Amino acid sequence: MGFNLPGKSIQSGTSAHSSALKMVAEQKAASALKEKASALKTDGTYAGAVKENPELEKLIAARNAEKYIDPKDKSKGKKPDYKKSAAYGDAQNAINKAYYGADFKDKYKGTATSTEKDKPRVEKTSSVDTDKSKTVYRKDGKVKKKTTKSVDENSDGRLVNKQKSTYRKDGLIKKYVHKRKDSGHDQEGEYRTKTKTKVKWDKKGNTKQKEVDVRDGRRTVTKTDKQGNVTTKSRRTLKGILTGKGKKDSPAKHTGKHPTEAIAAHEGHLAVKQTKGTRSKLAVDAAVMSSSMNAKTAKLKKKE
Image (cartoon, helix red, strand yellow):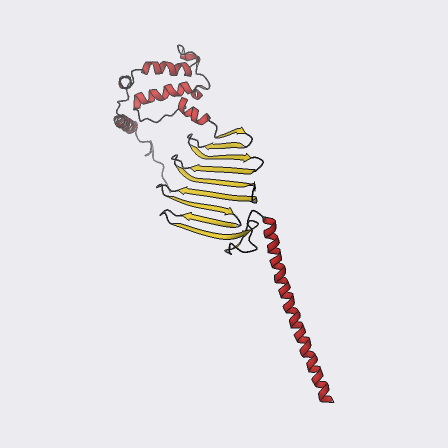
């Protein structure tokens, strides 16, 4: 339950009290501005700005030329898109620095900032049909990632190189990947190799690396950790599929140079295995039949 008191409310107070509050607010604002100007090593006045930058008058004239329809008669109004002008941004930013110090942050789009913003985020180049590159930029203009691809093809074979680099926000490289495919014919016959190298950097600059090499029917993986320790593993492959550690002199090994012979050897190995299984099953059936006949013969002899 409330009561309506006569006169002004407690919140509005008297006019003298309101004026006192307004005065205190103005004093605080002036004090804050003074502290800010002191921190930026300038007093925030025209005289201090001219002392900071003697070209202040020229800057103001350049700004007004971009801002007003008629700089000599400001009553004619302002240009509708003056804030989008790079020349206006350069002049106004320089004026602000003259008044508030060199550390004052740019608030308007100038020549440098507009160049970075208007720069395409993705750039593609292609010297010929087989050589291509692509670069992706961040908003601040720094490279985010870069990829290249080159193909070298002739009557003897085909070589494909792919490289990809990824960068952190500070511009330092984060990861590098290189893939290489080489195929063709030589004096020994058909050959096909694939290699992949991947290197990673952490924020401290430490690296770890992984290399994969696929050739002659084997896949070899070599890893190097951040401490420099190296481990290598090798496994047998058949038509690009891992089949186990195996032996390099195995008849079913896919050499990569003569895949037809390797597959034929593998199929022959399976055929022999199946034949052995069939023979063992026939031998068991013959033994069962022989024992059954012997049992019947024994019964007939007992009856006689």
